[in-house]
Length: 166
Image (cartoon, rainbow, N blue to C red):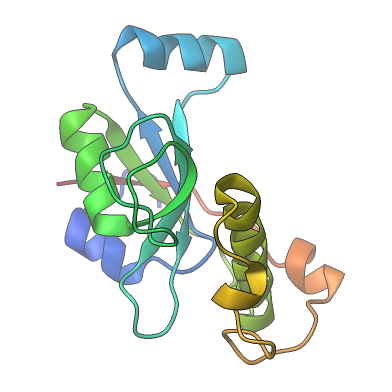
């Protein structure tokens, strides 16, 4: 729905894996990013919501404000952060406006498992410390088989984003 506004707690409570968080700031660096990418936003992250864990966000950043969930260290680059904390940092410390864009269809458990495998591979390559096998059990973190292409590509139509405020 155009014009929908949510507070941060509401947005975090309804987010699902695959939902996109959009950020837009006023500093010069943010405007340069938007100009060079021809994008209305300067930062994007994807929700990762897994069973009893707090909602997470997968994104890349140059700052070291929060510890990466995989490594437990403060670092730069692609990382997995606790969602609520990351949005608060981006909204307050970096002065960003925030929107949540939800997918129309839920993501299958097997798609989440594929994402986690990709994230583990990224962690292995970037940090040279962990291995995919040490992060994800042989059967996968979540039950499910291979993702069919139509599930992965055909059911992910997104709605208009809702504005998120602190």
